Image (tube, rainbow, N blue to C red):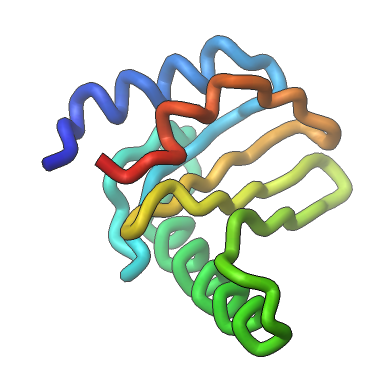
Length: 114
């Protein structure tokens, strides 16, 4: 079972410790919000639903062209990136970042399903 307090603490630490990461959330593959560190002006439940939908389409795409399991999706806008990253069997990590983020080892806590 996942400890939500420690998951949120780890996500807050990732956002605070990396100036390139502006916000983030962990969502279920069904689109439910698990934890979020998005600003209050952003509806993180909508972010969760859109993330799951985009991830699902990406999974279908890599299956159709025989590219294995989906690892990550990058959406680039004028002012930065949205990174959608597989974080285990049933979770997705979504990060709002600067245009050229340096993520380093901080993602390790999120990439294994516990």
